[in-house]
Image 1: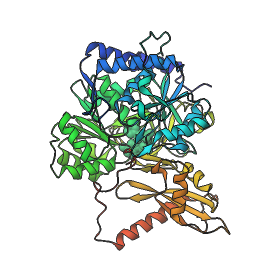
Image 2: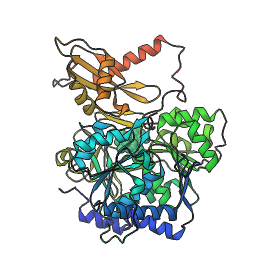
Image 3: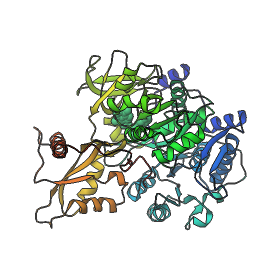
Image 4: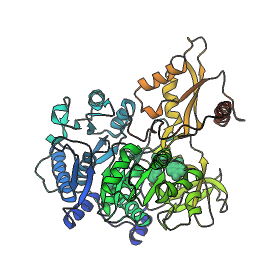
Length: 572
Ligand code: OOB
C-alpha cells in the first residue's frame, strides 16, 4: 500500500535547495560518533542496574549500542520496513532502540507512555507491528501485563522487549538479551525512505499515523538548530515525553544530537525534578507546554536553584497566553521562543533576535523559505494578509498524506498537496502566524490532543448512553479540558458522571482522554442543518465555568505548580 509522498519535481527542488541533504539517522549518529566518540550524548539521571547514579552515554557508546541492538533485531527477523511500537519513557534505552531501528530501516511507531490497551492494541494491529518495546513498570503502571494482553490479540506481534533488569522482564525478552555482534547492514535505508511513524493529535475516531522520512525530518532538525542557536556547546533538557514530536525535533533531542550537543533526560517535567537537573548539568535550552511553563515561572520565583545556564525556553503545543509569555524573561532570565508546530510537519518559531512584542504576541514564522503557508476561507479562497482563516501548508518537511489512510487523505489534503492543519490563524505583515483558534474537532488539553470522535465512540458503548458530544471547556491551568455532553438512553437506569468516566478509563484509554466533566442533557442544540451544534455546547459549558468562577470571586486560579501536571508529563 503506497503512502503519498512529494511529487518528483518538489523532491528535486528540495534537494537542489539543499534542504534535503541525503543523510540518514543511522549515518548521522555514526558520523558524530567518529568525530567525537568521547563526548557525552545522553545523560539519564535515573538509577539503573549497575549505575546507581544514572548513566552518561558518550556518542561512541550510543553508536556502539545501536549497532549491537541493530544486529540483535536483524537476528530476530526484524528488518527493513518492519514496524516496531516503541513505548518508552525518558530513558537512555529510548535512544538506543530508536537508532538501532533507524539503522536497520525498521520503523519505530512512537507511542506515548500514557497510552493504554485501547491505543496500543490499535497501533500494533493497524501497523501490523512485529515488535513492541516497553518499560517494566513506569509511573505505577505495569506495561508487561499490557504487552501480554496485546500479544494475545495481535498475531503479527512476534516480540516484546522490556527495558529493565532481566529478572523483571515478566516472561518477555529483556532488552539486555537482544544485542549481538555487529553485522554489516547490507540493505540500509535510503535518505528518502520512511524513518518512523509519528502519531497525529487527530480529530477522527482513531489516531492517524504520520510517515516521516530521514531527509525531511533531518531538515527540520538542522533548520531548527539554526533558528534556536543549537550547537555542540548546547545542553538540551528533554522534559516532555521523548516520543512527542516537539521534544524530539523542535529542536529537541534529535536536533541536539545532530549538533553534537548533550541531551539530559528528565524523568518528570515538574520544577522539583527539572530544576536540580538544570543546575547540575548546566542545561542551556528546553521545551515545555504552556501549563508547565507557568509552573516553572511560579517555581523559579522561589529562587531555590541556580538556573543561570538556561538561555532559551521553547513553549508550544498549545497557545501560550500573552500575559504568561511576558513573564518568562523576568522569571527565568532567558529568551522565550514560541513554537507552533505539528507532527505532520510545519514548525514555526519566534526568532531569538525578535523584539519582545513579536515574541510574546505571535507564534512565530516557518523554519523554511520553502514552507508554503496559505490562510483561506471555508471555500479555500486565499484571504488577505491579516484576515483570520484556515491554515493550509505544504513544504519540504510536511507530509503529503497519512500512512495507509487514502479516504482521510482525500479530505485532509488539498488536491495540490496542501495539508489542512485544522488551525485557525492570521498572518502578520512580517509573515508571523498568530493562532486564533481551531476548526478541527479536537480538544487541546494543555498540549495533549484529544480527538472528540475517539472519546465519543467509547462513551457510546455505554448501555445507558443514547448519544454524546465531547467539547472543550475553558480551564485556567490547562487552557482547555474535555466535557462530555451525554443524552441518556430512554428507560435506562440513570448513571452518574463518575460512572461514565470510570467506564472510559476501564476501556483502556490514556488518562488524559478520560472526560474531565460529564453533563447530562435531554437533547443537543442543533445547527441550521440539523447537526449537533458543538458551538452552542461549548458556549453553554463556558458560561457555566464562568458563572462558577464568579460565585467564588476570592478564588484565584489554582497555583499551577501545585496542580496535577498535564498528561504530557508521564502519568504519576
Ligand atoms: C505539536 O504537535 P502536535 O502534532 O501534537 O499538535 C499540533 C497542533 C497544531 O495543529 C495546533 O493545533 C496545536 O497543536 N499547537 C498550537 C501551538 N503548537 C501546537 N496551538 C497554538 N499555539 C501553539 N504554539 O503540538 C508540536 C509539534 C512540534 C513543535 C511544537 C508543537
